[in-house]
Length: 328
Ligand code: GA4
Image 1 (cartoon, rainbow, N blue to C red):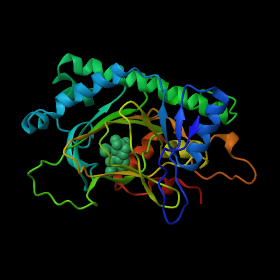
Image 2: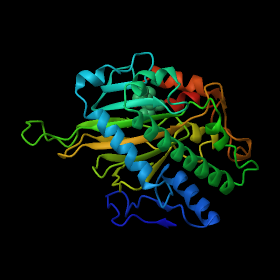
Image 3: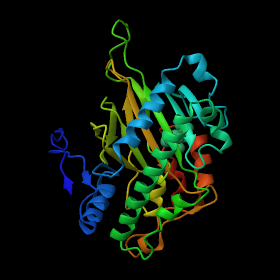
């Protein structure tokens, strides 16, 4: 069901903003209608009753906590080696000078243990790390496919696998990231400014992002008219983000959501884990023909995911990279 957030945020510009909360256990026709509305209006929704077992989530959390609690000298051993972004990173985001108050691991989600990009991270952890990550990725991948099929159905597309087949591709370029925003040490003199950035404003380049975090706040999403809304999360729920690629595939009907994370102000660490569902590198991305019709002209050119990804890595985190792919 499409529930309104329990305590809607009141602002000067709008009366009340309720972040969409979607209950996956509801009946499909209603569900697809509500997911579509959320993707159109916010490019974002919270997902409850998603069916991913809590044990899969908590095993994953324990495994990554083990990694981040290692001394910096150990973590540095598996540091990302540009031009590959995969591995451990601290403060630096991408290759063009973006920074944030976090450390992270970024992994290829496909063929986790055999992919050479991941090798140093995965091979250096206890075996339970690999199993926990593999089980978690498998569960959120299945969930993502289910959501994408519900979307295609709701859009009345003749092929309900039109989106999900992109991430089921054996060569899908999906990735998995865990962000750790360290807590403030009680005795520290760190400035208490409200504007420090944990992860700067951006939209995700992929199709869909499935995020799960612990209960430490920080995530904010931007509305279409540029208001920032804080998103509170329950450790058992997921947040779903429309990425740039889904915006293009739906010819702009769904909007990729701009979001950011403010630096952690609490003593407890914030930990978030994201599955970024992406096509294979050589997949062509173009607006689906059924979503182009008189009065709704084609908005985006065709390009491969590889071209889009290259553009993303050549620009800054906050750039509107999708604008470079608009039709004249
Ligand atoms: C944002 C979404 C994912 O975290 C990510 C990020 C990637 C990175 O951190 O390496 C990017 C960023 C993200 C978008 C623009 C480029 C690429 C950093 C950056 C400056 C893994 C992704 O795919 O794009």
